[in-house]
Structures are given as structure tokens and as C-alpha cells.
Image (cartoon, rainbow, N blue to C red; front, side, top):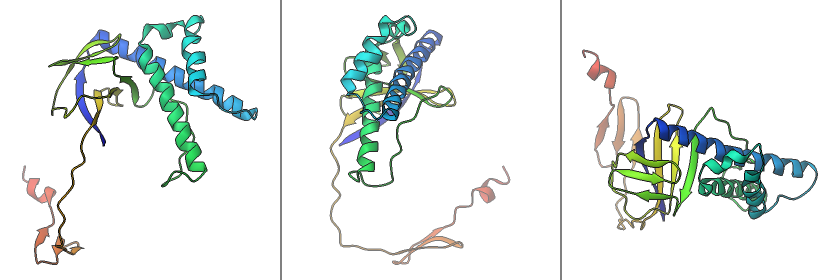
Length: 216
């Protein structure tokens, strides 16, 4: 079973500039590919394969004047951006065909730089150290290990949220915990005067944070 472990990081000004370039390049590759796929759809043609999109909008784009700056960042997160686009399309197609349960999935949308920014590195694009994490073409970034990683991560996503905070989100493989079987049952009644009353007689009082802090 896969799980995510998220940690706060503190890049310096040079690294923030490098990350801004990285987010912009990953966003450009996504938007260029998505715009091309949408145009093909309007013409009644099929979506190209993920490999064809990577060749056209990463490899070939680097050799053009208006996209040569894609070479300034690592190639790994650019490829992962198109992998994510491919997965987004697969989720949309499966949802339309009824192969995916749950709420209907909308088609992929263009990304903007006004909201949350992210870029993903797979193995080979990052390296973990005691107090820092190395990201390819970004450098060694200071990290706060709030908890220990259970296993070696398979990928890491660098994130900048709307509050200009930076995080690393690691994907790790963990063993699912099986809870012991029990025949004990309990009913719970929620109300206003008492937060919860259990069928075994136990009561949970309503939390009153304002009353407790009013004097302070």
C-alpha cells in the first residue's frame, strides 16, 4: 500500500529561483501538450501516446528558440508532468466509460501560476541526506524531518502552496495494518446539549473553546 509523507522545506533565494523555473517549465510542458490534444480532439483525431507527447513537447521543444529554456531544469519532472497528464486523461476516459467508480472525473485543465505549484521527481532525480534533500538542478534544500520515513521513497513531489510555503511529499510503500476482529458493538447518539452519548452509557461533553478562553 502506498502512502504519502509530507515535510516542510526551506530553500534559499537561489533555490527559490530554480524552483520557480522548474514549476514554470513543468506547467508549460503540461499546457502545451494539453492544448495540442484539445486541438486534435476538435479536429476529430485521437490523442497521441504519452511517448509521442514527450518527444514533441520536451525533446524537440528544447531545440526551438521559444522553448530552449526547458533545458535549464531537470528532464525528470518534465517527463513526470506528462505522465500525470496521461493519467488524468485515463481517469477521465475510464469515468466516461463507467470503468471508474465514484464521482465523475472532469477532463484535464490548463494550469496557472496563481495557485498551488508542484513538480515530481522519481528515483535518480533526488537524494536524501540527514538534514537536506538534493533535487536535480536545484541543489540541497534544508528539510525538517518531523517524522521518520518508514521505507525508501519511490518519488518525491516538491510543492509551493498559495502561502508561499514549500514542502516535499514522498511516496513510500507500507504494509497495511489489519485490526483485530471484535464482536463488540456500540451505538452513538449525537446531540446539542451532549456532544455524543454511547449505548454503554458513556457521554462526551460538548467542547466549549470560547467559554474556556474568554477570560484570556
